[in-house]
Image (cartoon, rainbow, N blue to C red):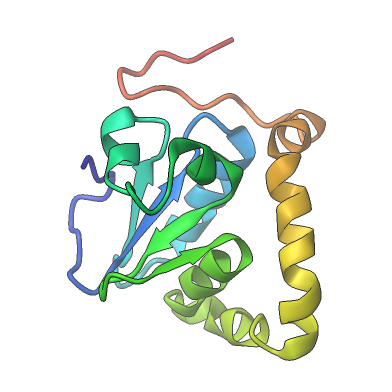
Length: 141
């Protein structure tokens, strides 16, 4: 599995993300700025070798539907709850991760997350986010 962050922590999270999505790339970039403990290990779910590491529990289609996070103990979080567990690992944003577990937010949050996940490419276009480059440095136009 290719990990984009060089100092992979045994306490870290493995985050299956969509490297082709400009919105996802922008969010990832912002998260990494707050990852003081270097606990976020992003892997591109579009890479078949990476996607195969989630089998048999999750298919490529599952990974494309919403973000998946593998915790150090081998358990998984998906979608809204994956975002919450990531925020808990970022000292400056951990309060928001805790807030996301409050029943009111835990009820409406997953619905909002699903909408954003389903429309992430449209949101990218609306926000005029640049298309991410691939590992070779080539950028799609």
